[in-house]
Amino acid sequence: MSQRVALVWFRTDLRLEDNPALYHALDQGYSVLPIYIDSEEEELTWKMGKASRWWLHHSLSSLQASLESCGSKLFLFRGRSLTTLLTLIQQTKASAVFWNRRYEPEIIVRDKNIKEAIKSLGLEVESFNGTLLHEPWTIRNLSNLPFQVFTPFWKKALSVTHPSPCFQAPVKVPLPRSLPKGLSLNELKLLPSIPWDQQFYTSWKPGEVGAHKNLKEFIERAFIQYKEGRNIPSEKGTSRLSPHLHFGEISPRQIWHLFEKNFPPTAAWKNSQYIAEIGWREFAHHLLYHFPQTPLHPLRPAFEKFQWNAIQQERLIAWKKGMTGIPIVDAGMRELWATGWMHNRVRMISASFLVKNLRYPWIEGARWFWDTLVDADLAANTLGWQWSAGCGADAAPYFRIFNPVTQGEKFDPEGAYVRRWIPELSDLPANWIHHPWEAPSEVLKKVNLTLGVDYPHPILSLSETRTSALEAFQNLKKN
Image (cartoon, rainbow, N blue to C red; front, side, top):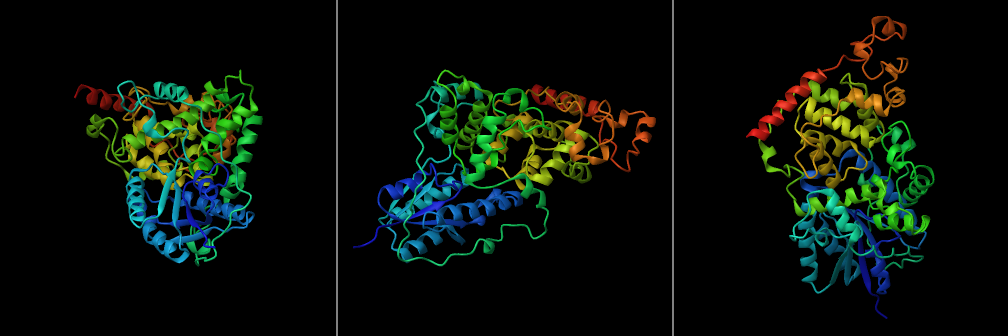
């Protein structure tokens, strides 16, 4: 009896549970060859950053273990996706290829070409939604246009049909008789050659198991206080699920249904701040799909003429290294470098400092975050930076310039977050820790702190740069 073989192409869906591509291949009775292709050159403008590649290594390792427990194996390859798929089709005599969709503009074009090429050979090719609650083309306003403001977008999304049930993880994944020779995980060379990633190991557990553990702990520990707790960077008030969601180790549908299971029908969890954050992620993908130019260009075209400052490399490097002399900004940038993640409140403060105080182009920040975040997601990264710069959807008004001192005093009042990431300031009293340059000399002497030696003086004047930023925004508005 001939064997029916399907290739299941894993991408940003590195899980077994609620994996539509895998489920449909098995449901149709195929023997499955699970594959992952490292096709970095096809990412073009946005090749995966170093922190994300660290996560990918460990996520693939986790998926390998899960598939092995089902009697299967993950086959790894490097090269052009279509060439690799065609070679595997020939080697395994596959008659079908399944994958879950991605929504980055360059990948949409690539996948469309791959689908057409394989279909022309007479094979079955299907792609599925394994990433979002709703496909981007299904949520439109009354004029049948895409939304550009979050609140009406999310209200409409919540009114659309209930997310479908999740697909259960398979118990058995039968392999084809003819198996190709793939690469070992180490041969993909995803890990850094210089060990800057040591703290990543104590901060994260990539993979499907780690994702569900994080979500369970968040529901038990922090969900009820999320609206307030999400703003306190020294506490575990957030779910930290963003990298798990980006790599598809858990789906938003799974999160939705887990909340539905854990809370009574009358509970207001659907309207909670946390579920709205899941909606913000949906909104980001919705915008990226409908406005594919936005990773490099502002959604609001007028901002192409905004008067950014000429970049002074020493100042840009000070921001990247957490050496600006502004403690809450520096603490965030150091957390980012050490752990591949930054608390969302501090992301907004640090981004505002770059685009409004330094007045450097938002794309500089987007590229740095892209390389250093383990949750670097093109849709979310683009939306976040354009929001901060005031040039995107639902953008922060031009006059909203975060004062990092007052933000620090409000959300890190005792300085616990700053003390953790800037040990040179750890002995400063709380009333000076967010603006040490104003501390009396006797206070600095008492804690043995010399500004300009142990910790830098501020690289700019917050008040002066705020005034000049407001003038630049006013000029843009006038013109």
